Image (tube, rainbow, N blue to C red; front, side, top):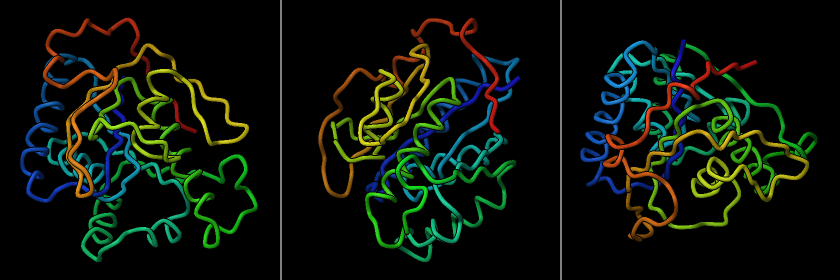
Length: 222
């Protein structure tokens, strides 16, 4: 039986903060493994540069199974990586994943040419975030804590995970259970340095969080 951890995170993390973020993510995974010794951890990850790839690296380092959830076809997705290094890391991490799930067109995007529509790509990212939220028991947010209205952004995924409400994705019916946890690791961005806001639970509060054995289920992905 798996304890499925989803991850959502900013792409534009500050390079100087990477070692500290890696240490916090590593401690987070190790704490879960200690707290739930009978459950095998697995990470559901959209594999974008920044927070996603950071979490995936640490998961593989610790022997945690990686499930890659791609928001669109691989060739199309690769166009969104900004540097050769992040693209190569994506490919390397993908090769180490135990499972790769490529999502179909989101509602409203089934016949849209992704290359000609930013909105279509945003809906795909939103769908990936919602899929991960719906299939995990714990959501790890590597996030600056600021409320953003961007479709498919980290803030929107966290809000959906906490409230089961999503905006900007037409005809979407979500099933976030409201029984799951969000653990927040504060991450400044290259574009902003805002303090944490919202109703997420900081990682430092994890030790005092209530036990969740009764609400854990094995994610079914098909």
